[in-house]
Length: 512
Image (cartoon, rainbow, N blue to C red; front, side, top):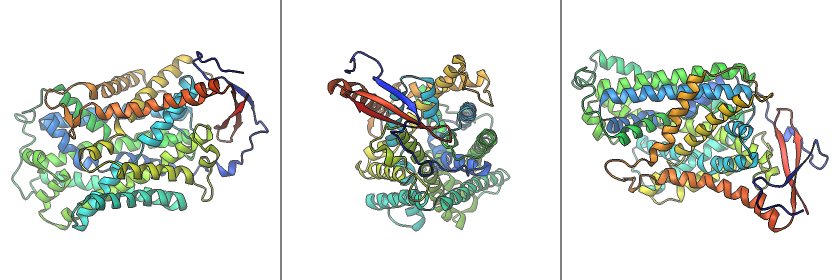
């Protein structure tokens, strides 16, 4: 039967579940529930805390123009992100399955296949870890006292990415244990920065008092440019991204209870430490150093408190460790979503991608994630284009989080019988988060007052390219499920098998 080209959904005939045409060995697909509360907290910490908190505060200060406005921006960013975590908490307790945002968007919007195809391109191409791989590489070179060259930077970045993917592939228990250790190390570094800040406030500095907290001057110089303030808020909120990290896993033990503990604890810890860390920076670093700094602002703070001590020299290594922890968090979760897309039958070679063999890990999905990361590390030339490419993931994540918030609202109004969250987010929090997310989606397209370029490229190019990559999902959906069946005169029959964790394996068979 030919497919009507004017239809909005593909001509797919669903066949009965447990169809004998599709045989699935669950032992080769599903992971056991092995992640407890501490493991969930470490996953969130590792995804959120990268190298940004050690350098981003300088950028936010430059954009905001004053100490008071910079601290206000961090407070607002923390509150918006906490609201986002509560949105994810409701959705995660209602559908505790692998896939995270993918599952929620598919549940709320139709056609489901279109949503899945868009998410495929988001996950494979826009959730790479090139940025933190390069950051880790840069600070490893600083720690070793070596000159930074393009290929040294790329070589170490590829090595860091390969290590993160490799340990999760062949030694999953070791990878999880290392994640837990590095999450503790990150929190310890932030705690040490905060304590150092209190020491600086008490007068233990090698430099004069910067007077950054004088009430009369704390807001002096605040920028009146809406684009600059908006960009500062964008940078701060991006530093909190990752609170959805645990939602993508079906390996969490007692997910309803674990999520209700892990998400608030992790977000509370990170938010408090981020804000106190910024206060610590301002307690020891004059405004002029914030503006002129070409190293992490944490290094400037340590130098002003401890002079050229071992703590200052060790900081680049600690920042590199923090970035590697971020790589481990991404390498653990993103391939598992790619595995889910293989179970959905959307990817090429889906039966291969969804397998857990030979190490009870999604080895093929991990290899795909590594290959795309290496391409993003090596393909762009050094300079502006390279800086542009490695920062592509932040904006589409904001787009997806915004769409997920709309999905939550739709699911609530649809009163679906199988949507039964054990936690209900207050409406005021949902609407506030939605307003903040919409601002973040629109803001990058508002022209700045000054230069129309970032990294030497048009200011709007990064979000535009990200949206174009997401749009490839629409094209893929149209070609595979609409155009090709119509041109070659066949129907697609969906064959489905239910699995023990509530997910399904789907395949699309051609029948003329």
